[in-house]
Length: 211
Image (tube, rainbow, N blue to C red; front, side):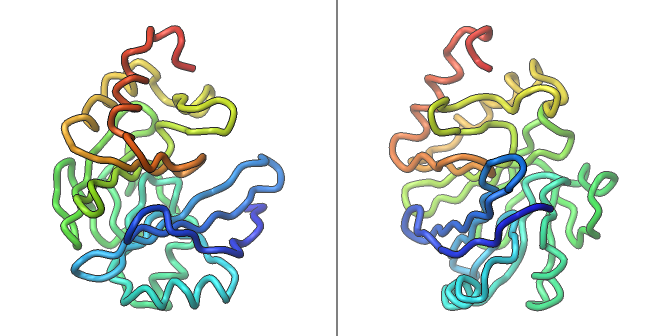
């Protein structure tokens, strides 16, 4: 991928950290996350950053697993698996489409290391999965189904990348079964306050207004 390695590690909310790699051609950030849990640090959609950022990540604690939000976000997961001897987790439907071997195939509603819960979101891709943690007032971490672009705000993954727009809109209310104050995105800025309410307001919009 034509990506510029991350040069900075940012704290999103307490115990959640983000590093971003800029895609030169697409002009968009690819976000990766590290979540500190009682069982150690889990990595979400990780890209290999600059050495200084990697050292900061290592300082957060022992890495205990890699969670992929969909089959196309394996990124540098194989590099992290080899270097830290940890397993890669992804939804069972990711196996057929992922270029990287997945160690642990997960199901909707399954509880993972660190007490993180997997939430399968159909529509954007067959394996799209959000991860929920009760940490820091509740954190929801999603992949591609929603973007939060500067100047545009919340939008669905656009055509031609989304598989089934109607199905995606049907699956998103599953997020509202959980209490969360923050939500992160694979592409776009996180929402760190009243995130659950903002998702609820987004879903109340007329469907023609949801891009």
